[in-house]
Structures are given as structure tokens and as C-alpha cells.
Length: 222
Length: 191
View 1 (cartoon, chains in turn cyan, brown):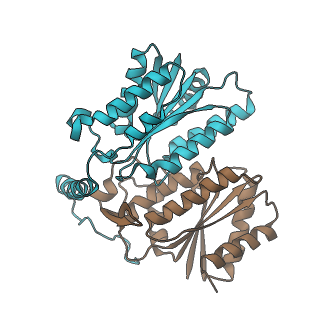
View 2: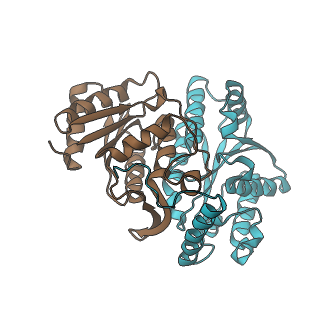
């Protein structure tokens, strides 16, 4: 089974999306799947890169999008790739019908805020002759750093959910509903996440030696 | 009163061109100034996801390109109209690349609760009234449902209601204008 992980975060290898997608890919490899990784933002910078991305999608049995929620939907470059894939699949009758699975995380505490983005991906799969293989969507993505084990509870729910999803995907199945539900579980109480988040923005501002307050309004009309 | 129309059409998109025409003619009798911005004709890099507009130069993106100019227009407008081909229920990549660069800089990163969910605070006292005007080649209930949901969710992020209208298979400017009038009426944009 030949799978393709497409990372849709502009932060590339340093992103939470890449981390989550890579853990899924690693889990699938342990179950016998071949998984390659591509970075959408890098690929879209040149026509050669776009051609490589499109060829990789054509060659895959399973495509996985891993991305952060951007304004309730997909980051623009990933949307661009969807348009390009759809154009190609409309022009050249696709030889196969790869499955599409999604890993999405948002910076708000509520996983359900990713629902519209998941819906867009699902509709994309439906309209381009791909088969929907489910989604893992989580909130509190701002907590996901380099080591999931440092998360409250050791990131147990995330790792178990990805473990279930990787086994099923590698064996030709879809992401189990139980994995989707487990992945969506909050990592900590909402009040704690927002408290840490609000503190974190101020700390970042200080660390960056910003010369403006967090609340600065460069456009006075507002 | 000023309206900013963001034309998210891609090259050769005749349906969205008709929608833009219908919307701008409907606005002509209701607002003093209409500014039309076409992202596909601008040099706009994708959002880098660096949060620099929150924690390095609050309120301003660190990437210096055409998107930075649009933020000033956005904040200074009373009404913003997203005109876009409905793309699998979402916005076109052309519109999205601009929105990805604008929206964070008009929000304040600190969290607050809106409608029972956590969202960001608003950076400015006033967020422009916003409406979504989508186009489809033919009726598509699933894409329409998703698009309406996306526009509504964007409204929650802005702590207000965003209205939406979809033109399905509309190729004549008169019908497009009628739909635009209906949308503006619903949004309370009157002469």
C-alpha cells in the first residue's frame, strides 16, 4: 500500500501538523505501508514542484492531508492544490480512486471548530473520484509541540487515536469512529488552555522584543 | 459609507465576473464608495503561520507585499463582500490567500468566549459588516450548505452575523444584481 502524506502547514517540518502526520505515517509503516511525505507550500513554489505533487497524488493508494485550521477552513496553498488536483482529474480520467484521510488541528479548544474544513475535504474527495477515509480533528493545537509525551496525560489520547487510525488505514480501512472521538478529546480544561494561551502571547511579545503592545491598532479608522 | 469587494475569481471565471458586476451595481445605489480588489492580480505570499502579526509587529503582517495595503482598506470599510467561486464548499484559493493574510492582523490574539465557543478578541472597535456571495455552475446543495456554514463560522470569529447568498448557474448580470440586492437587504445595507 502506497500512501502519501501532504503537510499543509507553512511551518513545514516544524509544524504540529507535520508532527501529527508523521506519527500517523510511522504507525502505518509499522503495519506494512509505504508512506512518502510532501510539503504543499514548498511544492507550490514552482511548476516542477506542482507536477511532482500531482504525480505523487496520482500514484498513491491513500492520500493524507495534515494541516492547521486557517479561518475555519484550509490554508490557501492547500486549497490551491485541491483546485489543481481537481483540474487534473477532470482533464485526465484518473486510473484509480485513492482514498483520502485528514488530520487537522486548530488553536481553539473545541475540536468541532474543524468541522467545516473536514467537510470541504470530504466534498473534495467525493467530487474528484476519491474515496473518503475519515478524519482526525483536534482542538488545543497550540499545545502540540515537539514531544507529545510532555502534554497533560502524556498525550495518551492522541497517540492511541493515531495508533488505531494508522492500523486501519494501513490495512485498507477508514479511520475508526472511536479514533476520531478519542483524538477530539480536550487535552486539558478549557479555562486552563485559554489562560496558558493568553499568557503565552504576552511572553512571545516580550521574547520578540516587540515595540508595540499586543492591542496596537496600526489603522486608526477602527 | 464605503464597501470593499474582494473578487476571489480565478482567471477565466465568467460566473464570478457576473457576480462581481451584479454586486458592484447593487452597491452603487447604497454606498458612497466601492473599492474592488482582485487578489489574483496582486502579489500576495501565503501566510507563513508565524504569528508575527500578533507577537512581533501587532496588527501588521511581517511580510511586506500587497496584502498589507488591503488590511487598511478592510479596517476602513463599513462593508466587505467576499465574492468567490464556491470551491468544494469553501472559498477559492485566490480569496483565501488574501483572507489568510488579513484576518489574523485584525484580531487580537487573546481568547474570549463567543456563542459558547472560544475565539479571539477583535483588534478594532468596529469590524466591518461582511457578506459572502458565492457562485456555482449549477445548484449543489452540499456545497451550498458547506459554504453557508463557512461564512457563518467566519462571522462568529468576527463576533457578528455574516449573511450569505449563492448564485447557482446565474450568467446574466440582471439576475446577479437581484441576488446581490437581496443579500444586501438581508444584511441591512440600505441607501
